[in-house]
Image (cartoon, rainbow, N blue to C red; front, side):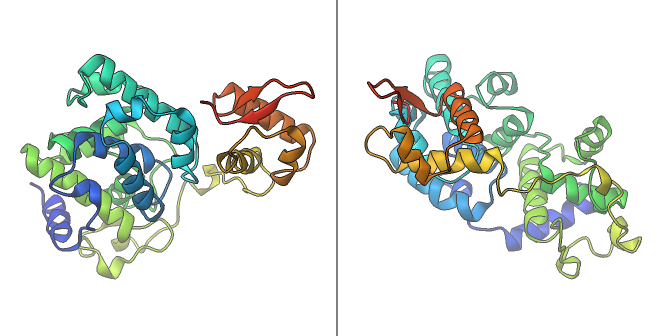
Length: 293
């Protein structure tokens, strides 16, 4: 184990958050659900949703049989509701292909709907204690600063990053899994993107970025952020929120409570139908809209 890894793991032993998907009684399914929920969504919003979700559907078989409308309502405001559909598809695949048990094999995990390289690695590490290269944005940021002396990693994961990260993973499986969790936690709590608490970091005496005087982000020009107000994402979110709260199909005029009528709303509504997030209900005065059954 390198000094960098040892320092971060020791810090984690003292500072790890008490999260339900880390509990001794966690299940591989619970870990998989947490990883899908945590994509682009902070822990503070995910934890109550995860607890409610696991209370309703504690196994893949439970979610596989659930009405899709209930699944979308439970997803609530976690964002990107297509992830909820993918999670239900994943549950069905686990039932059909693996007898209802989440597999620990990398290839089998990658074959599941909604599971990419990061999620597969995270499930193997956090659910099964396997040695895996777990690289989310938090880990990438810690390694970029501590090892390479740059403010933030490149906008997209590089092969060199993956090689360097793999070289740090301890050979012992249990320690490797601990390192994966520890490096992620350090990035989430201390080595944050905008306001890193360097004075609290276990790597403060060895961090290359800190030693270099905390230089600015060399990739700032390539990072684009889109305003939320007025975007199609906002319109889709408003429509989904209205439909989640409706007990009956909603006629078009009632959608005015979500967003004013016009080309943008029509476009967003059509995209929600195409994505399988909204269903049309035929009527004499035109279709109404509801969550899929």
